[in-house]
Structures are given as C-alpha cells and as structure tokens.
Amino acid sequence: MMTATELYTIDERKSNGIFYTPKFLSDYLAKKISQYLKNKENISLLDPACGDNMLLSSFISQATISNITIENVIGIDKDIVAINNSSEFGKVSPTINIQLLNTDSLFPFKSKLSNEGWKKLRNKYNHKRKFDVIISNPPWGASLKEYDNDLLSSNYSLAKGQFDIYALFIELILRNLSANGVYGLIIPDSIFNHEQTNLRKYLTQKTTIYYIARLGEKIFPEINRACSLVIGSNNKPTEIHKVDCMRLPVNFRKKILSKEISLEDVENELLHKVVQQRFSTNENYLFDIDLRNSEEGTLKRIETSSISLSRIVTNTRGAELSKKGVVCKCPICGKWMPYPKSEIFKCKHCNKSINIAQIKSEKIIHPHEEKGCAKLKVGEDLYRYTSRYKCWMDISKDGINYKNPSIYKGEKILVRKTGVGITASIDYDNSYTNQVVYILKLKPELKKFLTLEFVLSVLNSRIITYYLIKKYGENEWRTHPYLTQKMLISLPFPEIDYSSDILRKKINDITELIKKEIVDSNEKNISKKTDIIIEQFVASLYGLKLKDYLEIFDTLNSSEQLIPIKRLTNCTANEIFSKDGI
Image (cartoon, rainbow, N blue to C red; front, top):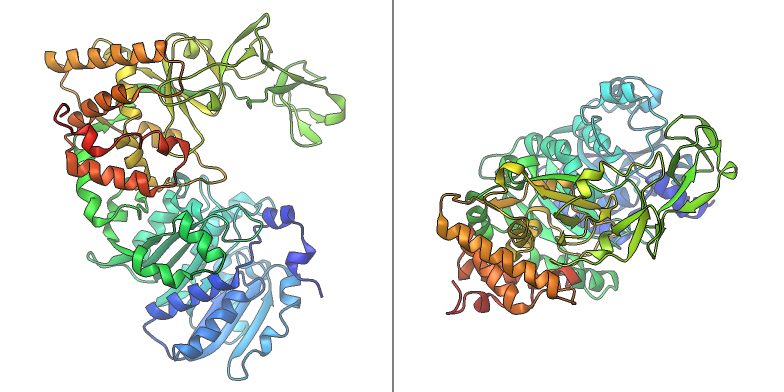
C-alpha cells in the first residue's frame, strides 16, 4: 500500500499541512521529552496527528532506554491512508495497548463540541484520565475552509484573528494533557512571528516551558519551511524557572543534515538558559531566545534611552502591485486589477465571477519612461542609504490601488519589507513604490527639530540590526523573511533633547553629510569614513560604550553573512570608538 508521501503531491501535502517527521528529529524529540519527564511509570501516550507514527515509534523506543513504562498509546489521524498503513506499528510491542483511530482530532467523531468528542474518544478506549505525554507534529498551514468559523471560535480560544491550524492542535493538546504531563511539539518557525502573540501568551502563562529550539529550514525534505521544537509541562511556571534555549546556525544545520554531527552533539555549545518570566514581560510575549542573559544589559540600555519610532514618523505601504506589474481589465465593470492566480476568480470591484480566458494581461511597469508614468522603486532598488530607480509605472489605470498620490511626493524614507535585518534609503525623486516597500515620513510637528536623514541614520545603525536580531531572531536567510510594519514602527528611537542647541547642530551636520553622500555617490554604499562618523553619533545618543559594541559586532559576525549584514561589518567596534571618535 502506498504511503501518504507517495500518494500525495508536494502541493497537496502543503495544502493539508502534511510534513512527516524525519527520523533523526523524531528520535531527538523523544530523547528530550524523556529527560524532562518526572513520572516514568505506566505512561499514557498520545499523538493527535500521528501520520506515519514516527513520533510514537521513537518515543516507545526511547522509553526502553530511559526505563519508562508505557501502558497505553493512542494515535489519531484524519488521513485514512496514514491509519491503513499503520497495521504493523500496532504490533510493535505485546505489552503496550496501542490504538489507532481515523478521525479529526479537532472535532473527534464529527462532534460539534470538541471537548465532548474527546470524552467520547477516551470512553471508547476505556481511558478515563488524561494523557501523561502528548507528542505531536501537528498540521502546519493547512486550509481551514472545511471548518465553520463560528464552530472553530466557539471551541478554540486561539481561533481568533490570524491563526494557524497548529495553534488549535496545541490548545487541544493542553486540554487533554494531565496535570504536570509533558508535551513535545514540532511546529513551524512562525511561532516567533507577531501573528502568534496569543499562542505564545497561552503557552507562557499556562505551561512550564522546558525547551525551545529554533532549527531553521531544510529540516523537512522538499519543504522550505523553518521549524522549531517546544517541550513543556501542563503546570504554571515558577518565577525563577529557566528555559533551555537553542538556535541552530546554518553551519551546524548543514553538518547535521549531512550526518556529520547530531543535534545532541551541538547542545553543549549552543544551549543557554532564559528565565521564562522574561517571555511574559516582553511586549507581545516574544520568545527572544537569541538574547542571552549576559546580553540583557546592552538591550536594556538601548530600550531605556528610547521611544517608539511610531512617535517620530507616519508609515504606509506602496501600491498594491507586484514588481512585475501584470494587470488585467474586468470585462464587466471595466476596472483594472492585479492579474489573478486562479482560473475562476471574482472581480475585486464588481464581485462578478470571471474566467481567466475572458481577460488579457497587460504590464504597467516599464523599463523606460512613457506617458502617464511615474518613477518606481521596488525592494531590490533599495540599498543602505542610497536607492536607484530603474523602472516607470503607469499610474492611470482606474481600479489599481496606487494609494494616495500625496504619500509619494516629497522626501521620504523607503524601507524594504523582505530580507534579513533592515534596508532603508531616502528618496528625493518623488518615486512611487509597491507593496513590499514601507514609506516613512516625519510627523509635521517634528520637522523643525529632526530630519529624515537623521532618522535614516538611526535605522541604518548597527544598533537597530542588533536589536532586530536579538528581539526577533532574524539572523539568517529564510524563504520568506520579512520585516512587519509593527516591528518597524516599534523600533527604539533615541529620545532627543530638542532644547539642546549642540544636539540640533550635530543633527544638522549629520544631515548634510548624508545628503552629500547620497547625491554624490555612484555606489550602493556610503563611504566607510562617513559610516563611522554617523555610527559614532548614533551610539552616543543611545549611551552605548565600546563593550556594548563588541557585543553588537559579535552578534553581527555570528549571523549569516548576507549582504545586509556584510554592509555593517565593514569596520570594527574599535574603529568606531577610536581616539578620534567618541
């Protein structure tokens, strides 16, 4: 009989969130759970999305090594193929009662009340108590179209706002985990994203988290999605409880995937502890596991001398259009819209159904100037400080959401949404941008004190990239890395004494220096000399010293050396704090 991996295409597996666990990862998770498990007798074990039973099999094998006695095992999966192919697994041990069930764990036996369905499930297998260990690689990113939204929200507290199906599985796991029972999860790296604030709050407040590992991409063959491990127990944490944290760098990940080393091999070098209470006190309950305890002083100095960037600038995004600029005209209402991806789609304006065969495409982004066009800068046209326009966009198509023309007029800071770290430049050309570029303008009441060039100097400082790495862990290439608007406008901006004539003169000097560099430069980067002068000034505003910058450069040098990072390592901390500097 064919396995699910053989039966379904990659696209089908992505659509259904099917990412079967590699054995080395499954074995590692089982070993880690056994280390944190306090009760090791008569264990009841559950996997509510068991797939090919790799996780259950690994834990049963590890149990023998760790002297854990397993009494009952239940594996559940809504994919009948997975269950039908598990007959041999059901015979893995004559001393363990193993039951496999084909049902939807979110609503067992098609019950409209999830909790009732789970009571029925436990009664079916004469399993009155909750489970001691729940191990799972739940579906990631699976479509939720088959579920009624009201039904989801009435059964799951995490089914609100932007959420992923794996969050609902985590909620059902904790509901069915015994007091002090241990959970072990393989989940996507999106657990660290802003959209998962509610999930992080849920885990941080309700459970004692033992272990968080951020493993990155390529762990799952054929699937370019970064993954993480989270292990914890179903009880509230103490104030002093510390979480074992680990980030797997690219160089180690490559060696693990080539089987040169194991995950266990790198623990001694990479593992560090973070007090769980820090996650609770963070804004948005961030899992800032890249910030070691020894580094908290530098981050605190940055934050205590700052205000939010949102108090300095207004922000918006460019036109709702891809950089290719392919559009089409509705044959019914006559308005234009971005070219659709589906064969059958609805017009964004008149809501009428249209077959893609009824329309013709047209490109409104051109490599040369044409009548009715405006200069256009997309993400790849932005560098650190400088930018270049290479295209023009037709801004006459009725229906395309170009945004208010006023946002493009005048000087503005352009920030690239995608990529590692931050790429920010200033635009003096009244250029239009597209949706992957953020537009920042000074708030009117601050124009007599500050300049956009000065704001740009702060955004492009090594301090801000360091802050992004430590707060959000964006220190390596990902398939879809991006800087959210919320992350951008919440960045720490140094609090300025507007009454200081000396400070205002220095801001003006820096402004003129940046203007000259941008206007005169034919390069993608400003000169090293100017860069150091600017960094010296910004560092003084945050009150940072040489020891802070040694830490900042250590972080930059240990990050993946992509272009945005390399631009920042063109000098040293000692050069910034030389005798001619601060």
